[in-house]
Length: 228
Image (cartoon, rainbow, N blue to C red; front, side, top):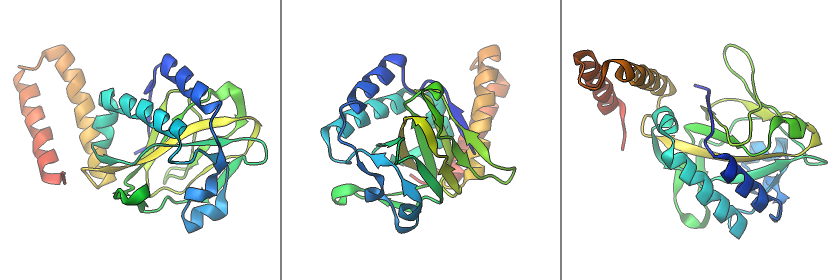
């Protein structure tokens, strides 16, 4: 499932993130890549342990915690610490690759199975040319270039790339999620059901027998598929 989530960060939070990024100590993005990705990767990235990355991580995680649609779509068991990258100038692209199945966290803090890949845009589309996230899908390539503060989720199994940035700079946050529901198909069914239930509740109310029954079905499916 490829899903666009609007306004994960408020305009004020985007402004704060941009101020931090403006003075951040960028390094070669290949420092955190797996063997395959490093061959295709040509961008810059914040060092994982720097103070700027820590401040930005706190900001992004607060946005995730308050966003109900994000939780419904991803059903997160574990979220890897957000990372931050920049594309532009001579370091302006990331060719086709698949994310590593397991992300090992720094300083022996554990590991995350990368069920879901996430990109949070921190520059607006009119600030740079190119830079589209292209996710290969059975129905063709999906090209994604979102407003600052918006998030896209897509399966970690997808072949994807970032097109060359030919003007300006593309700033983004990226991270991975290990979901409580491993199957992308099952997550999609649960998400669709939850969204329809929300609309039904807004009209019929929580006490309507159909709402009660469908809510029970949702939770029984979740109980069947979830791994906590």
